Image 1: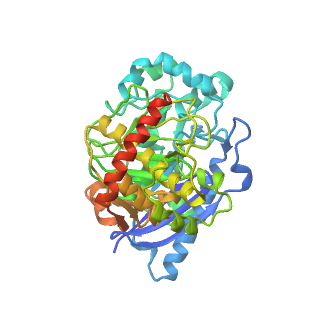
Image 2 (image 1 turned 90 degrees about the vertical axis):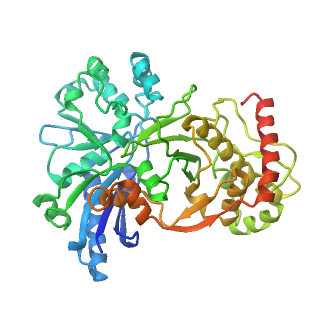
Image 3 (image 1 turned 135 degrees about the horizontal axis):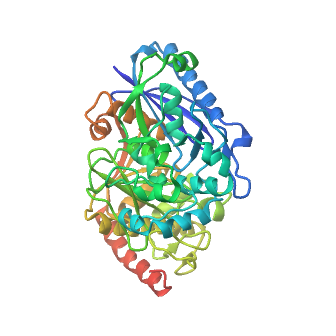
Length: 483
């Protein structure tokens, strides 16, 4: 049985996961970053790439120790792949060494630069269907040109978080993938760095080569083997952004399927045969190997209302109390803060209940149901953009642990909702490692490796009631001017 090692470099630390070709997790370990790396300071958030590498080394060493302890020799490892945070920027010198701390994806200093790029590259934004923000690496490169000019001129390479770690593993130049390169302005349609980037910034020759996620790009060098304990010559495969890796780990693989991550907010990703655009810029699309696209969006309604409105709640007990009240005619839009970004844009949107709940249990049930109705509206918008619908949902995130909520979401959306066995980004990276070396691509790897823990099928009678509630919900959104 072959093993594949996935490395997830996140905001708070590193997770390593060794996964067998049949999807069984053989070993996993995590290493947290020191506290000073974690929190942004006002609009700034920087981290040390060397700290990433040291955490990667430790996470790999822990995983190898666990493999040895379970009589699974590390020489059964067939490949390694790495995912990282999307939009994080690393600046390298000619020897591949970081010239300054990495600028994290959530560093917002480059907001003005992002708007400047949007004006200068308007045709490109229309072509790809998105607009640049301060979370994009290209906006951060522009900020460096404007505010750290000498360093910008001396920089040899501008790469992404996952690219940097891959480069440390192979000892060669950093290579990127479609998923990470999106936020540096890579043209996913023509598969090249567009000419307008050079016209604006003169940096194209300092950007990495880009290949599809799940592409073998080298092997573990002797130096990296000595530092990590990995076998020298182990295949190194390109990963993806952390969100894309988690999406692949969820199990979706057919056009019309969706992965939703229900955490503080609700994040959507689906599979489409075509790139998706929205006139209001609600959707942007990653590209997958094999010519498929991964349209996605993120709304402001998720599970944030639970700690905000029910801070002392026993969630299991509240689920049990709410279950017999579903569906309920008290309709909620459980938005905690003002403003919505998907499935519609409204800076003035505020949460509401159509009537006063009779008790705490009904209020909780209305919020469970309300989140599911927002999710249904999200699928309606995405289906219109992709041109295909009726697929299944593969749900991850903290909210997916609730059986009551999962059944409510299946009933309210009329879709089968699955809970995958392991929806973590590190598993998705291991899947891509297998896709690039063992299976015939990511779709086969997902089919063979992803295990579904439990599935929730819509109940026809409850779905019929939710159809009427959804109409009332949309009518209330329209009355308030949100739709």
